[in-house]
Length: 441
Image (cartoon, rainbow, N blue to C red; front, side):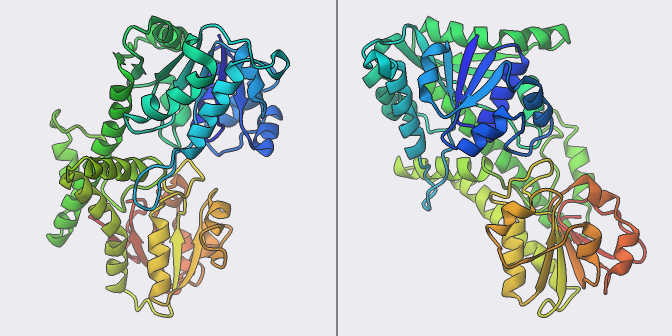
């Protein structure tokens, strides 16, 4: 297939590279010339395991990038993968996605040399961006069809890719969700054709991927429900972990036991500092805001947010039991919201650092890949170039991201002024000469 992907952020770049890996000819469209140049040079504009080599392999061949929406009519299917960030009230900002929809419709109405009069025949536009159930039909499809007409189908195919494992998640999905207008066989057939190489590869490995065929609003609600449920599960185990901590009980031992119950399952039971990133916080806030606008108070989802927001404060309270924080030098290990990514959006390290600075601490921070992104939040913070450097002379250390390299720390603790560790991710192995405290264990 000839596929275009509008938007080259975390989602768009990953699906463009992976679709090229599956054998499709893919063109990535982005308004940022630097991003376009990076992809065409074979470089990934984001840090994501497995992405660099795929872009390097396919750039100049099955994968190319451009700022020109005029390439869309030359493709069979267009994915819209534009970010929808949160507004201050928790609602989502769809302005960039609406603008991209407008430009997509204009491009599909005909190339400039055709005077915009030649409508492309039987094109399918698929919304990958996460939007509320009514947005596609109410705001996006009308903008596309106003220019391109009914020959263009508009569908939804929500993504379930985790940052840090997005490539693996795309290539080995738990499910595929196809949202189409009732009776729109053209869009459904196009989605099946697009994913056919992936489904065949998974079947050859003995894995059948369930496909959910539904309407567009339901498809988008599946995305929100999926993330809200997982976020609530993490907050629940964190809440239980805080209770376990008061009894001196290791929450991980409890989690291992309850995870054996197939009604609960073992995944997402790693208690600790909480969830961040671009998906859980944004999606849970958006569905809470939307529910309130419809007159319903989502108490469980709000509780999940409240528990998550409180975990950094719990970490700081534990630290204050061991160290007079005012004037203390405190190392913060980990700035990305999770390992495997340089994304610091809603990282739990941010409120931790804020809390340390409010308490008068001298903070030094380290992350293997996310330092430059965190400088946008804390330009005057001291950043170390290694974990060992961050620990040197520190009165305490807080572990906020579970990078593998932190598990190997050992002699590096000897350079600390006082060997106090508060671990928010169960990364550090307790030692006899360490004052070690786990957040929920």
